Length: 180
Image (cartoon, rainbow, N blue to C red):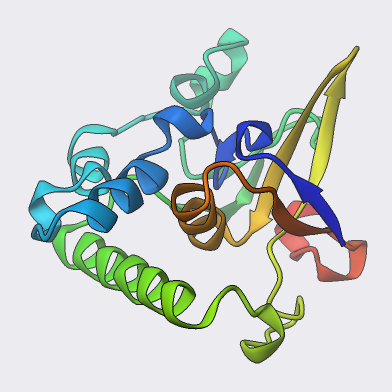
């Protein structure tokens, strides 16, 4: 187990985005303070307005990525080329019902963590219920890439902005085939 600051989070699923602009995090902030419907949330707006067509639209680098659909798997620090045989639609181009379910999930997480604290061991999954990921480093700059637990990380960061977030380093055996 390690601890990270919210500012170290550098993604929302595979979307490169700092926590301050992360629509999941911003939605949690809204829901903590306001009683609003899902259509008034930042995450709903994100689903409505963010519609990349290619991997270049997501990463903004390398013209070769214009040849690959946004749903192809590609993490430039892991993969040499995009993996076209796999698909990832997380946090991109979703319909209203999906957005509505995501907001419901966030509301339940907020309520659970406010009432019971953050207890991953009570919600076991193949990763022990923990937020998992790995560090990306360049020189002295060190960021945490969340692999599993984007919603939980956003809720913890918004509910407890001055506290660190407990995370586990992603184990190779936890990785999905598409990520290898």
